[in-house]
Amino acid sequence: MRVIRALLLAIMLTVAPTAPPASADSPATSSQIALDWNLNAVNAVRAARTMDGVAPGSTPRLLYQAEGLVYMSYVQAAEYDAVMKISHRYLLYHHFEAAAGHASVEAALVAAAYNTLVFYLGDSGGVLAAKYSSAIAALPADEETMRGISVGEAAAADIEQLRANDGRNSPVSDSCPRTTTAGVWQCAPPPSVQTEQTPWLATMQPFMLIDSSQFRAPAPPAIDSTQFLTERDETRDLGAAASTVRTPDQTSIATFWNANAVSLYGKTLRDAAIQYNLDLVDTVRLMAAGIMVSTDAGIACFDSKYHYRFWRPITAIRADGEPADATWSPLLTTPNHPEYPAQHGCATSSFMQAIAATLGTNNFNLTIFGAPVTGTALVPRVYGTPQQVDHDIQIARVAGGLHYRNSVVQGQNLGHSVATWTLDRFFLPGDD
Image 1 (tube, helix red, strand yellow):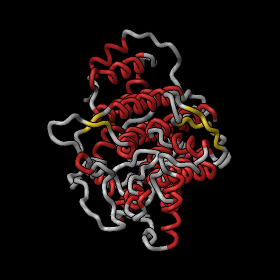
Image 2: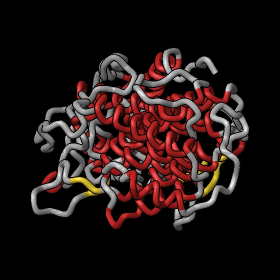
Image 3: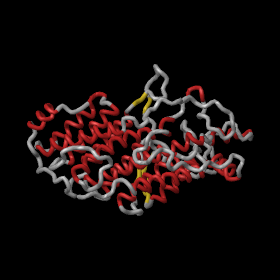
């Protein structure tokens, strides 16, 4: 729903200016409004529900993590273009027409985020509308703010038009495969109540890649190969719910990285912006690069997943003929999409590479908050480099019983390829 200009003007006329208008290209412009609207977007995406893959008449489900990142990318793309249209510090993601001279970057960001969120997710209870009104009312009541609103609305409308037929929620079969063929993926038990998870993501048009198959992973190892049998046994022993060889630290790492990616990525980006004292423009770039690059890596990952349809450890281990394995269960709940390659390997490796590239250092020393083994409070881990994150992701997905080691490695290779290709072409310096 578009903002009603008469209402906005009435609001603005009743609010006295509290600060001088910010210069559009000023490096001192506070990042707080970008941090606030990233959190608003995370909360809106986490609360959103969909009927995709849900039987008619059933309760709508919450968004899966991979599709949640798609919606975050819509928002960050619109914010990025709105802010860069005014600041010119970095090149636009997608060109759009708008009169951006002497416009407020803060107002542009707020309008772009709000309009994009409402377009894709609605606004149950008017939560976003209230946050929007409050944010706009806190800005100077002047022409720069009004022009910024117009730029933000135009950026949101452009992203909506650009992505109108991108394949999101395409009507594809999502019923679980009923097969006993060795090596072929089946939904995790019990199959009677399961559907495939977001199969449309495999063919969705990426945000920056040419197509979803551009960096398709090589084929997984044959199921009778030494490599596969060795890695299957590693996951069986290390990733079992009742494992006697998994260390407490490995359990902690597996659980930590099982946190919801939308929340984890959002908080990591906000904390990085604060830690590195980024201004609004560079914060918006950091957030757009981190979310959009990892989303494209996730889309590419799902292309490989649904191309190969490789079986999960819970299926492979229970089928190996050993009586002790017939009831084997993993530490973590197995998601209902094919195993190869590992989605966390794809998305998180590209996410961390994007952060390192935009911060300009591989030694970022970030504190990341993930899920605890018990309790509800998030727990921190400090990572000095992207390579340290890659190391722990391999431990996490094997010790969680969800993947084989090579699947995580190949996912990380894919993620790095996506990040390298996209960062060479997008979010580049402009003509500030």
